[in-house]
Length: 484
Image 1 (tube, one colour):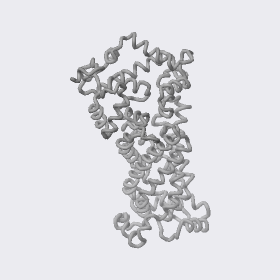
Image 2: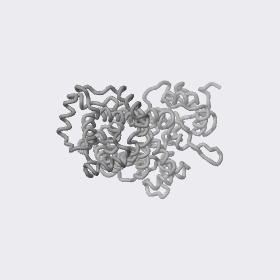
Image 3: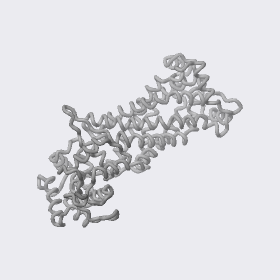
Image 4: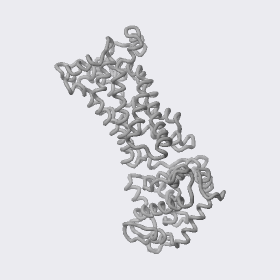
């Protein structure tokens, strides 16, 4: 049978270009009156109480009646997209406007996938579209995808089947989002257990999250390198430490470039560190959300704290030897303003102190990074959600709001764990301490508790813009890479 003769195939658009509601009607083989009746019937289905509008409870009940899994109903998002006047209710005109816009959107992407323009999506066309979007899948996954959408089981996807599958999905209909939606709602039955097939999270998001996190971390550390050098300088001084003399010492050692000593290795280490942290955080949010039967956006502050803390610990452990070398590089006394050779310095640590020396201070580092990352990331997302709900009235926060959220969360996290940072830095910089308890005792004995807060002021000056730049760049990269 020729493709153009396949039952159910109808293609009013012969080539890519603008589409209209007339094209949609032709693809569905509906008259305008029949479409009006269909949309009114769907509205009445949700409005089971016959009150003339839809609220969150009615939408949630209607989606449940359609047997959409409870954790993936998108009831809040559907209400938000439909409710244009923000009164918490969706009248018929708002519902009709959503249906018009959604069917046009779905037809546009249907046309983009249907490259042969025969009015239906063939499995190979769907596979090509997924590959172009960077999603790899095997034949079994593709067959399950087609089978889930292809209600009459004839091996092709008509526009009507495509529309029915995605009509109540409130997010933008990109091929990545569509696959992600299928990935979440299509639970594959394998006997007593059900598993979510691996797809976008395995093949697409990993690389994109790594890029977003790496770029964000590198940008923020470069911008704040002078403050980082000053902070480390103050942290390792056991005598009375003041900011101005420390600044003069740094200038004397290397002039302007002295403030950027160690920035090269800082960038090398912070790119993978930030990338691993953010990507692990996103994975853990998904895992926690799935285990609780919730969307990852609804895991709450405690879930964010656990995910952020563990993600920070994984990232810090992975790059710790580079962090120790960076600290030694920043605290070594230079000859005639010349920075020590990085390779030579690393070799000396290995030969004179042994390989375990590269992990000196790891314990206080982990004790600090877990609450820091947890407080930092949890506070940031909580503040962002609060601003979205109470200040911006459910619109997405812009860069300025993200900047403010990042500033507060970064300062809060850094202040809470600063004494552990001092202990870690002193252990990294010198082999004179036998362990963490030795640093604590000697610091209290010779400097008092104030010794644990040396360099706090430049650290706060550093962490505020660092956190802000990191999060703004990260959010921007996520949007540009279609991760939101």
